[in-house]
Length: 227
Image (cartoon, rainbow, N blue to C red):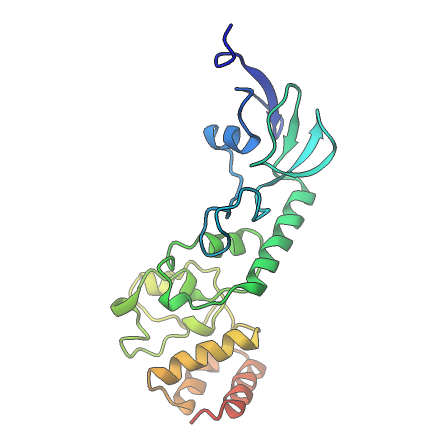
């Protein structure tokens, strides 16, 4: 029997799967429609380095050294058993998303991936609040409501709603709560200022948020000498 036709058995999430000896666990998962998130090949976060993003972690249950391992670098071996959904996997991936977010410059309104952003999806999947509705909005350039003179709350509102309103042609009303990160709020307020919106009309639109949130926006505007 040739090495190309030789099969070994591994277990992913309790399911036995036949695979080739030269494959990685990620290869096998992709071929069998098992969801393991990756970001290594997203140019926003790395230089296509295998194992760089750490998002594809799985937990070795049997057939190897117990612990977490990147599935893109983990070769299959007979008797190997891994979990893609354990609590340790979820929490570690969540930490990775939080770290990536802390280093990521958010200019979602001008990003070609807005509306189809794998990172925004990961933030939703791992319950990490940190990207704005603009990351989920498909309206780019001339299609952006803010660019067309509509006071949209998207730049200062948390993503997680899949930009339902803007996908239907309406402005974001801010129903998914205001961002708490002041750097992102400053970035969003700058976008409003660049489009010619004044302090009073922004604060009036922001009344959909809590009183404390409106006061926070007002404080930032004062610091930024927002007219």
